[in-house]
Amino acid sequence: MLKVLIVDDSLVIRAKMKGYIKKLGHSVIGEAKDGQDAVLMNKQLSPDLITMDVSMPIMNGLEALKKIMETSNMEETNIIMITANGQDGIVKDALKSGAKGYILKPISEEKLQDSIGKIFPQYCIEDNDFLDENDLNEMLS
Amino acid sequence: MEKKIEVVHTYTKDVLLPIIKRVKSYMETEMKIDIFNVSEIAYPKNIHLKKNTIMLGTSGSIKLIITLGYDDILLNKLVEMFVDGDDVDDYESEEVRNSVACEISNTIIGNAIDNPIDNSDIYITPPVLVSEAKTLYKDKFSKFVFVTFATKYGDVQLTAVGPKEQFEEELDFKEI
Image (cartoon, rainbow over all chains, first blue to last red; front, top):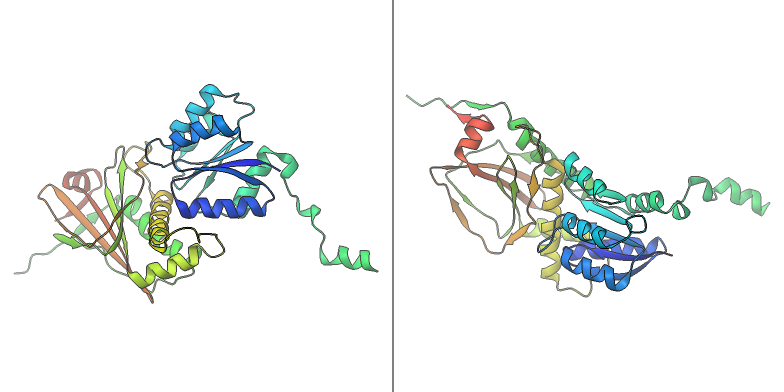
């Protein structure tokens, strides 16, 4: 189970993310509304994963990402950037600065699951992990 | 004799049409709300904003203020669709409405914004809510572009405001 910090200024996105993360079997250990809070909460909580919105007031997600990476082990810090703006330069800047992935809004449980699976292969759910109707019938017969 | 107005918009399709298309596709695909009419692009001298209007700015080589306004009943429907299954009970309904309006507007503009001038990145400000209806009056140095999308729950109103020369010289968005 991953300990996740959600960073987003939008309350409805925080609520949505929280629901998805819980459904995927992980735990939300904190919520930050801007980049400045995210930097502080990362130090206090040491999450396994941070989901970070790019466009936020006070300190945006790209600045917060860079601040966190300055003081953390880049290999062990796992940040997924969330953005509506999929322009090449913004995404490249995030990945170059240490983000392990990004999700283009609108967010969905599938997109989040896919991004988590790329960083943590142990949480990657392959199709063949699910039993289909034929498998169940075979087991029951 | 009536003055003939011809609208030349070579780059319009690269800046505004993606936004217009994204409003339509977002409403229809993500929110399951049909858009049954999209108005012609208009260039009014003033604009009366709807009560629920979200404003975003772009920076970089394209400088625009973009607003998306929603009729009350339509926004209620959008909130219902957006938060379906999410736990938002701890928040005031007005906070949730504003947050949904901001989030939808941010996603539409963020997904659609493109830069046909020099391909450099365009940054978008966090969305802000204009809480009460206001009228915007055009200055001689500015230009308004206005489009309305009709749904059975009410309208979405899209406005882009920018420096006149940007529309006319860089975006080639000229009335002759």
